[in-house]
Length: 175
Ligand SMILES: Nc1nc2c(ncn2[C@@H]2O[C@H](COP(=O)(O)OP(=O)(O)OP(=O)(O)O)[C@@H](O)[C@H]2O)c(=O)[nH]1
Ligand SMILES: Nc1ccn([C@H]2C[C@H](O)[C@@H](COP(=O)(O)OP(=O)(O)O)O2)c(=O)n1
Ligand SMILES: [Mg+2]
Image 1 (spheres, rainbow, N blue to C red):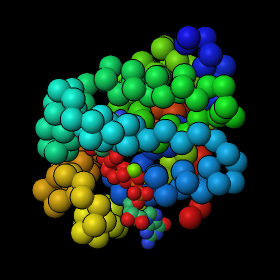
Image 2 (image 1 turned 30 degrees about the horizontal axis):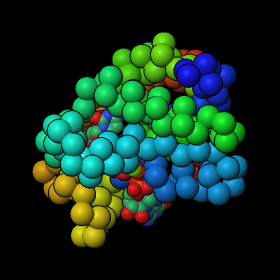
Image 3 (image 1 turned 135 degrees about the vertical axis):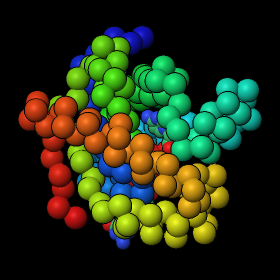
Image 4 (image 1 turned 180 degrees about the vertical axis):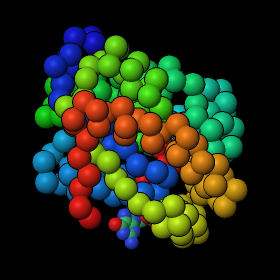
């Protein structure tokens, strides 16, 4: 099964919470027809299913923490396999959140050819998420959790950008 995605074209999309990863991915899908897989959306779908696993995930996400690495990776991999036959390439949105997640992805699936870095100022991200929280219904779009997600982004996720910059595959779209 996993053979199906062995040579898939993979683009990581990384940026802070509310930086606009999902928004930019939709534009890339419209223009280039890639398959958009948002790790956050996959996790929220599991929560919405009401499963036991979903309940555990919900509690972690509500605190603004990262769910166990294997859980997210398995979900992404299953979603990629399901689309392998019809996909020109994959936009992996919101992953990796830490360098270790990137390393495990490469071991189990493959290497990315590109990392799109969606950059935004901290205050901009907070403002957008507070606004989105008025209608999103997302349990983590509240002031306290937003602050934790932002802290975690600077601590754990920014090193991901540094890691892939040294490989020469990071591009920052001008928005
Ligand atoms: N003004 C402005 N707002 C934007 C832009 N891009 C996204 N937004 C808004 O900012 C909010 C967050 O955008 P998303 O695309 O959901 O951001 P994200 O990075 O996927 O965020 P998470 O789902 O939290 O991972 C949404 O309400 C968007 O409408 C932009 O370029 N300019
Ligand atoms: N690779 C991932 C992606 C998301 N998560 C969890 C933790 C995140 O705060 C939530 C929501 O992720 P999403 O990418 O939708 O949102 P933020 O960028 O954090 O605003 O899911 C994770 O633990 N590991
Ligand atoms: Mg998103």
